[in-house]
Image (cartoon, rainbow, N blue to C red; front, side):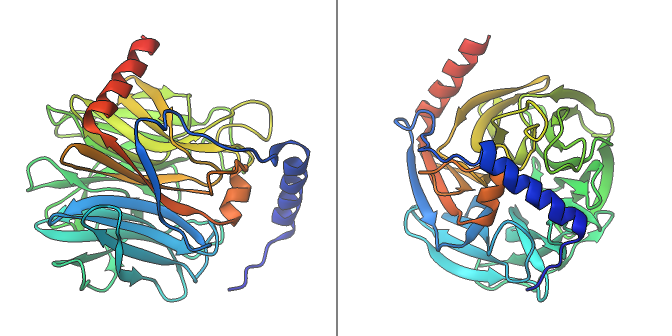
Length: 379
């Protein structure tokens, strides 16, 4: 597939290459935090760019989905691979999804009315600017309905991960395809979505995920880019938004410890955890939060209504994050993607090269101990 870059973009790419050469492109061996208290292994790698993963449990098996492409950027060669496994070690590919002539990315699972739903974002742009949300569903995980666009108020919105507390109403957060708006939607069947409320406007708000607290209050995180500069923005970060049912008013707090890209929020006992991307720098021009020159990690956070607490970094680097979580028995499983973890390239280098799908497995007690120990040190 051919792409043609304008003069301005070509100049920016040249500047990027020079900056990588002078200071951002050094490679080093990478080690994650605390790799003695969880298991860590590669699920899939074929030398291509495997990214945007999600994980769920359904009908007693693990289900994992991810994009497979040439690189991070948009290409009509991209596909979405769907895998299943009983033990999370031995995986069997059961389906592939693609959109003729277009890019496909950001797959997300939901189990709605007994069916396994898959939501994906179609894209026609080199710089990965999806324009709406498509869905497919299956009763057995093998045969799937044809991909088609969602219905209702959410057309043109990029939906994240649907959830429910009563198995009657499903809620999902999404961000507008043109950026700058995040919202909450509701559905009873996962196909037609009605707008509940706008969470935030402005700040080039982007990827938005949420989780329910014990009293059904919603806690959400929003990726605030602030600008579209490839070198990031010093004001970039994460917005934390809280709303009580019926979810039409939101209280918001800003966190500057990172811009939480590719967020996956989930309940852990009385806390909300987030799996997402962490920037290692936010200083000086060219290396602000979100810069393509920064080094990145997939990290675990505790999300509170007024703050984001960094817990640990997983072995990860380059182009990384966009994971999913599943809990079964005494273990918590988390998937994500990363450039090969024996190097530590800047984000832009990772976007152009090989990435693999990884899995980590915690014993529940170990995870609770790690979280508790970290929070004690920060108080």
